[in-house]
Structure formats: structure tokens, C-alpha cells
Image (tube, rainbow, N blue to C red; front, side):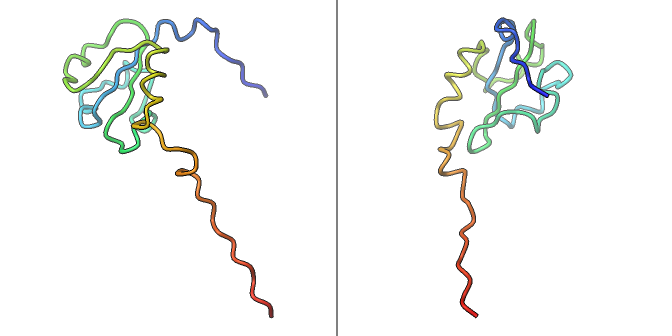
Length: 104
């Protein structure tokens, strides 16, 4: 099975908002493309999250006073390229050290 890339225009109508995690209590996930809080992109410290929707801005967004945006697809990529949103691969990947076996 191969995954096909979405049509290049697929992202044109999407809007994104950076929201403090503490304000997710206002989110109606039935109106978002992120159907559950566990599916949100969060910052390194998990204090901010990105929500996204297609079409008109959901009414609850007005309640999120600490939010920034909305952003389009290109703009949100610039936002999440900041170190606030990711750790370098070397910080995330810590393979277990394999110790040599002692001779018997």
C-alpha cells in the first residue's frame, strides 16, 4: 500500500492557531481537524498546542485569549520551526547502551 500526497491545494483552506494548553478547555474538537487533544502538536514543554480547522473560524476561538494566529499552512510551518516546538534529534534519540558480556 502506498500513501499518496494530498493535492497541493489541500492545505489552502486550513487555519491554525497556537493555543496555551490550559485554554484547550474551550476547544470543541468536533469543529477541529484534530479530533482529540492527544493528536495535537505540542511544544517541547507541552505548554502550547496547535489546533487546526477548515473553513470559518470556530466561535470558541474567541475565548482563547492567550492564543496566537490564525496562521495559514506556510505560516504555521515557520512558527513550529522554532526550538520552542522541537528538540534536536540527538536529544530525542537515546539508544540503550549495550554493554559487552563478561567472559565466562
